[in-house]
Length: 229
Ligand code: GLP
Image (cartoon, rainbow, N blue to C red; front, top):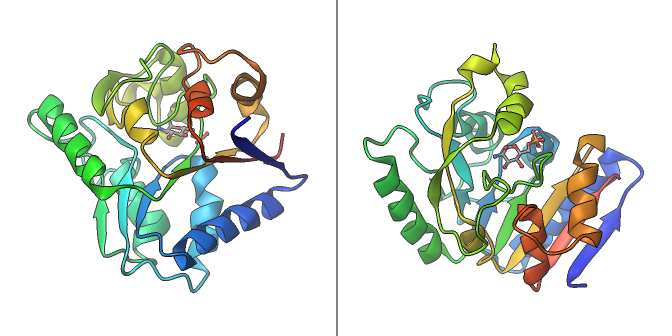
């Protein structure tokens, strides 16, 4: 198996290890980081913000963004990144898809070109309860590039906790495709909390199938998975 799995009894140790891996990549000369959002990333970004890691010569590309949510909205991924990381840890250049673009299909294809040109050294990933990565929902071809997606009811429900009601959760998003994510030289996935057990089990012991986008990671040669499960 190409996946290096590390299990932790407590979350603090898990986040310390994630922080250590990021520091090692930075010290080894990594300049391009693929970043993720979601509750899983909050303690990691907080750990980075308290550190002296210096990203001022680095570029970031984020995985995804909601369509139609203004950047100023607290739950836009733009705002998430500003609040949780960039305000404290400036990067030389940061990139997210523009979910407010007039033509989101066009925005997706431009973002694909941009990400390809950045040659991501380390891609951070969380995972959805249904095994999605980025916003690549079950059934997404592994060959997919950056595209506009219709979010599934289960993903909107899972993310409703960040909004006042489920009606406010956008119905669409722009996400890196699976093939785009797999271009990264190294992938660091965090699967934290009981709700991620089915996705982790699929990754570690199920067949490689588009029903579980996370299983696409088995086709990559350099994946590290940290989990408390
Ligand atoms: C969203 C994001 C994913 C993230 C997932 C899990 O759907 N698009 O990138 O991995 O949520 O989020 P959480 O860490 O909050 O469980």
